[in-house]
Every structure is written in structure tokens, then in C-alpha cells.
Image (cartoon, rainbow, N blue to C red; front, side):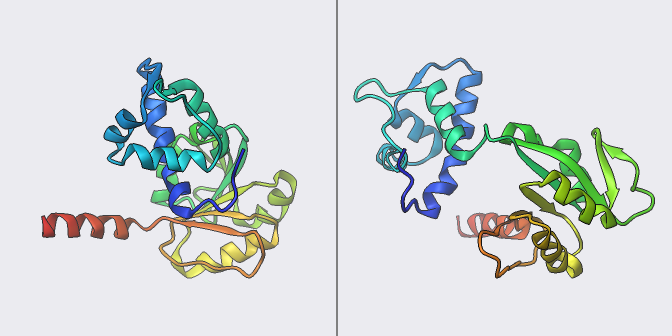
Length: 209
């Protein structure tokens, strides 16, 4: 399977492919052409073929793609079947909302635990996931080796919390703190989620239409 020099733009389109194919799979669609898939997604058929060619050969000329097979292949590329482990740091409104509503397992992640400093939260559970004291990180992380930490802590402690987790071996961060985090440690990845960016993009679209 080819993976060399895959652009960030291609990588960011893969989850969209997976989401659309998953929906088609649930609807019972067996086969789809690149042109039909492109129409649904608002991109060209040639772009789809070009993106997928970064990872190998998919589909047959004149027959299109087998939905279930392509969905499985893209899921494998994305690591959906890798059974990653994940923890949450910060169980405020956003952290709690993610625990209650986001389907981590559908993305290939097992939510192991959440951490907070509030005595009212420590020792309780949300959606069956235990909430532990932040002081437990040094014991828990080396023992369970989570792949990713979700950061929903206050901005003032975002970088220090990330640094602490990096020192414990965490290398992936889903960052909701609205702070641009950084690390000099090789292999550390931050995926920043900025709600304001998305809303301002929508603002531009409705202002300039």
C-alpha cells in the first residue's frame, strides 16, 4: 500500500470519504462510481481517484467501487481497526458533552478514563467512564499507555497539561482548548479544534453570498 508523501489535504479528505461510504453501507448500497460519489461530496471524480491512488489501486474501470470494500480499506488506512486508547483531561461542559454524545468507538478509540480537579466529579462516572483525579495521571498513563488525550482543560493550563502528558508518553492530542499548543518532542501530534474558525467561515459565506 502506497503512503509516501501524502499531502495533508488528502489526509483530511479521507474521513469524509469514510463517512459517506459508511452512510452508503448502512443504506445497503453495494457499488458506487467515482462520479456519483463525487457528486454527493461536492468534489470531482478525478480528485477522488487521485486521492485514493496515494494508497493503492481501488475499484475497476467501468464498474466503480465496492462500497463495503472501499469503506473497510479507508477505515484501515485511518486506523479505525487499530483499537486506539484515549483519555480526556478536563470534564467541564465540553468534556462531559463529548463523553456523553461522541461515539469514540466508531472512530476506533476506546475511552478509558477522564480526569479533573473538581472534588464533585472525582470518583463519579459519565456514560460508564470513570472520572479520576488529575493527580492520578502519573499512575494511570504509564500503566494504560493511552494513544491520545482529549484536552478540554482551561486555556491557562492547556500547554502545561499537554507537557505533563507528553512527559508521560502521550503522543497524540485532540485539542479543544483554543490554544495553539507545541512540543519539541519528536512524534507528538496536535489536532486543534477551533469552533470559532468554523463559525467565522460560515459568517464569511453568508456575508458574501
